Image (cartoon, rainbow, N blue to C red; front, side):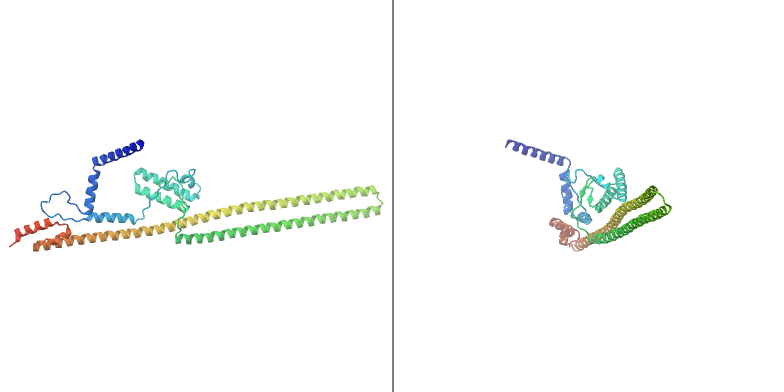
Length: 369
């Protein structure tokens, strides 16, 4: 309980220090004067000596117009607690995962932002920061208020135009992927057909070599029988024919293996090329989609800004018209009062009953009968 009482005492001391500081710096007096001027009490504390104290409260209209201009500009407040988001990833790290063209745009915007901030051109700096945020939003994240954080954008409603663009580019990307897959399938089919032809060709060549060897051996056996050669000579000849046949078959087998290896190499190269083409097509489609979405966003934003400025300009012109009409009405009422000596019509324009009575007495003294 004693600790809680001490805590309350500390809070009260801090409050008194704040009151003293604001009193010494004139904050309370300034705020009171500003509020009085806004609500129309612009003669507060002034001794008019009974003279009229007319009020043309254009300040209230200017303030309301300024507020309307700000609120119609779709001002956004973006806040995040310290330490929120992915602790191991910041915007700079994630920016490096974007396509090269997007990285270059962000680097350029960052350099321009630093230059504007160094010059104190904060409007330009805010504009450049918003452009960087718009680009990051295309890839589904935000850099936060200072552009250094990583905040995934979730549950963002997709505009109708963006949905149309995404549908269009999804269809184009699917068609491009299908064309690449079809070309790859045809190339693989051609290689498979060539591989089958290689097997048939070399099988036929091996059979032909064996047949030729058999014919030559048969001819030699007939020649040996007719010539009366010994069985040893026949055995030597048979061995020689067998060696020649094995050599021919080995050469054909090596040639067949070399042909199949060449086809395997071609297929591997085709697969690598196919994967590269798929990746390049996907990246190109992503860049085209991002560019189209960014262009559409900028177009819609420009239309919105133009509409907001048009509305603000119309509101400003209306304010001026109303102020001029009010001044004309005041002058007409004052002229009528001065002509007749009846000042009761000045009440709606801020005249008090004492001021009206005094004005009528003065009029009677000068023009009364």
